[in-house]
Image 1 (cartoon, rainbow, N blue to C red):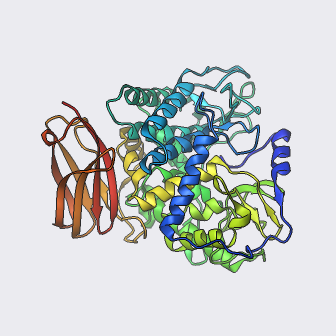
Image 2: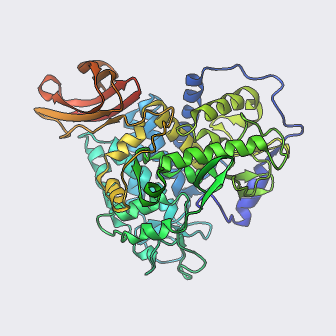
Image 3: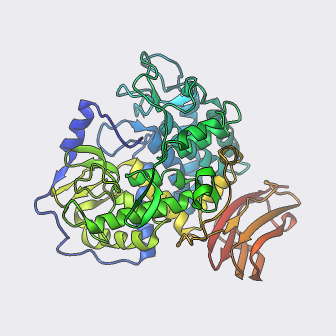
Amino acid sequence: MTRSRNLPTFARSLLLAGAIAIAGLAHDARPARAQSTEALIDTVQHTGVMYFWEQANPANGLVKDRSTAGSPASIAATGFGLSALCVGVDHGWLTRDQVRARVLTTLNTFWVGPQGSATNGMIGYKGLYYHFLDMNTAVRTWDCELSTIDTALLFAGILDAKQYFDGPDPDEVQIRALADSIYYRADWNFVRNFNPGIFMGWKPGTGFANYGQWTGYNEAMILYILALGSPTHPVPTTAWTKWTTGYTWGTYYGYSFWTCPPLFTHQYTHCWVDFRTIQDLPNRALGTTYFENSRRATRAQHEYCIANPGGWTAYSDSLWGLTASDDFFGYAAHGAPPAQSDNGTITPTAGLSSIVFTPDLSIPLLHNLWDNWRATTWGPYGFKDAFSPYWNWVGADYLGIDQGPIVLMFENYIRGGAVWNRIRANADIQTGLARAGFLAGTTGVDPGGVAMGVFLSPVAPNPVRMAGTVHFRLPRAGRVQLAVYDVRGRHVASLVDGDLGPGEQSILLPGNDLAPGVYHLKLTTVDGVATTRFVRVR
């Protein structure tokens, strides 16, 4: 799992030295002033976005793995950061110009960085990248592996940025070109090494020794989807079969699901890909979806924490969340059910990043963390990685792979699947899903919090000259508004304002009525909001 780390001695020393042991850690005796849910989500998202803006090297775009002084860059954190910075633009915390320049710098770093099999001085090999990079030189550090899953998380952020920067500006055109070039260069068949599945890692000198293939339900869905969707080095469809044959179906606390104890495994791919209404073969056979699977896994973990079989301090219906994180002893992949390395450590990202699956559980957790634990667990970049009331301990660090999923999942929750909508428009990822055998389907279970079935397509063609067309889908009849806004958020035109029935809708977008520029199209329904962007040119 990408979150599990065999850290060098130096890194472990930083971690343990940075841990904060707090005698008598418990509920803050003076709770912080309560905020509305909307205000809390805004606050937490903002601090998370700023981690990726400030804990980065502006000269090369790399994002630190953790906030510790001397931390290297993590390519996974950098991938999450590319998406998170786009969220920052949409909220007005950063300007499009600022983020466009940072994204272009980042992509240039990964495109021109030296690739090769040498032990030192390389950013990657065969189009894939090393797990950790030096923050200044942007080459391999810590004797780390060429990481397939971390490369995939980097690519997910790169492709999201490609979809976001869809304008005619020369830098945005260059971003899109670099994104494709970086993704298309990756030789996924090299990391199969003549095997059915994809290997977890490779090292100079020792190759694939000590690394197995990715099999069984975990965070590697995004890896296989990208490898299947590659137009240049696609893996065979049997690779997905190899991965899914390792699944384990279990029933815990009344919920049946594909099991993997740490919650991050049920979240990472879902940050970008919307699985609510699509099913592959294993899920069609059981009448479920990966979205529903994550919902059940989260609810089962919530029940586990209420039952608290280990007797750990403070576990409750509003203080829960187990995943890979720092802890009093170092770093471990905590999770349940089934219980795995549970030692009384609560990791805020675990429960918060499940907000799209379980808003009824994640929002009370958010309020409890803010109202009662903020004094010891909160700082300039949001909630710290982990804490343990049992061990009177709070981790000192913020981690990019914590903050990223929180920012993206909150965005999908409050903005009608904004990140999902961008990735849905990426042809290569859609090819990957199709080659994995995904078809439209549903469990009939309302996912709650995120509009089930609301979909707004990209405008076609884009850029728009004389006219364009936009398609959207409504799960039920109701009031609908489809409006055009300029980049300053000013209302420009109304395309729909009235009651519509359920199903697919097609609307003409008259380009002649719009001045040249970048526009936002916003769909507002009784079930949620979805947005997309388009460019009007002469």
